[in-house]
Amino acid sequence: MYNISTSCDNHLRRFPKFLSDGPRVKRNDKGKRRMNGKSYTPPKVWTWKPGNGGRFASINRPTAGATHEKALPMGKHPLQLYSLATPNGVKVTVMLEELVVLGHQGAEYDAWPIRINDGDQFGNGFVEINPNSKVPALLDRSGPNPIRIFESGAILLHLAEKFGSLMPSDPSGRAECLSWLFWQMGSAPFLGGGFGHFYAYAPEKIEYAIDRYAMESKRQLDVLDRQLAGNRYVSGNEYTIADIAIWPWYGQLVLGELYGAAEFLQVHEYRNVVRWAQEIAARPAVKRGCLVNRTWGPEQLPERHASSDFI
Image (tube, rainbow, N blue to C red; front, side, top):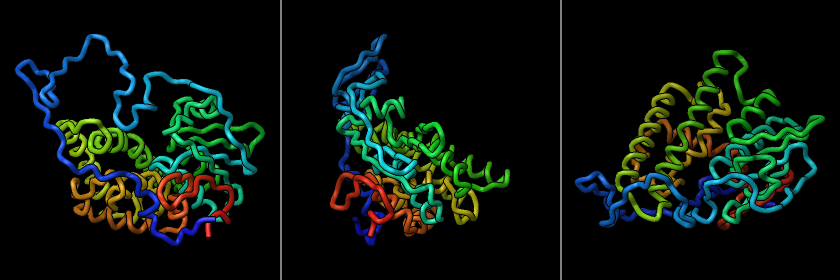
């Protein structure tokens, strides 16, 4: 069992603070990109250079499919989650914990860790559930035939419709909620794969790339801040899957828990986002969801099989 009395801020604290100045990017007279005095002209045909990917070089490759055989574990509950406590993974564990709090008995679930740094996502069992080899992935065995769901937004939508919770039922409210859900799905790659990668993980600090994605990340925060100026939650006065999807990325960002970039991005300027993020972080289900499938740091809960796993 795990004690969840501590703040959720600590549960997602995972990104080292890379705050040193990076190398400047210059262009020569022919428009070639220069890093550390070296020029680069893209070849006519790109070829993969294994190991050329920074922190995640060992698990990045330009092909899909399984690399090895590894069956997935199965628990007793109809819902089987295979994930890790990354922002995308936290979306789903928060959703499931919220459903449990609401009293949906069928929302109890087994959560199994997929250790992406070890390549678990390329095992044939996981690839059968998610051919894209990304966490999270869900197997719903509650019906006569198991249903696989991958992509965090699709999982949230599936669970909201399955249990009739955390999504407005009226057409206008539903449309607003889904618009913000898919806003997050389309916007977060610029924050994570764009800003986060070049600011925190890339083997070299590239000024142009960091500036480009910092600008876009701040623009997105401004979009969210303006929306929250007149609404308690993202899509209105009701807490929905839109909030659950957006909070692990943008909420944690303004709380200082992503990439060590709070000062760099001056996140305190987005007061409405900060207010919203703090309110959601205090929810008991969010605190529990932050813990599930966490495999690093002093506060861990790699597997979750019952509500009694928490104290």
